[in-house]
Image (cartoon, rainbow, N blue to C red; front, side, top):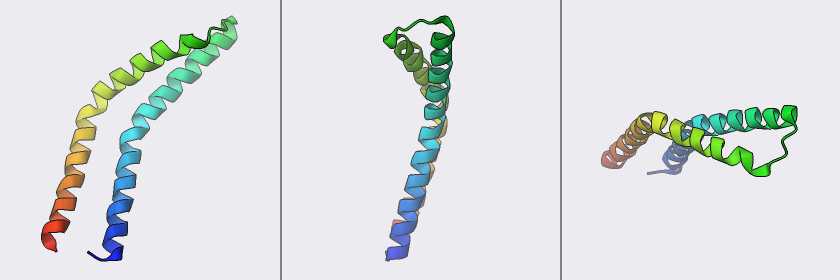
Length: 87
């Protein structure tokens, strides 16, 4: 395996990490902004109010996106294994 192949596998791994983390991060961001806006509008200044809904939303999103994440990881492993076998 030469340097270009290593860089290609690394680039694919970073792209896979971004694809797997993006849905959860965006849902966490949306819930956080929504709760923050609700707190600003109602003048509720409870700092811990944001954590329970955000944890629940990310857990539900994780359950929803887990099949996609598993398929993406399996596909990446198949590609890496095929590259190793081709050497």
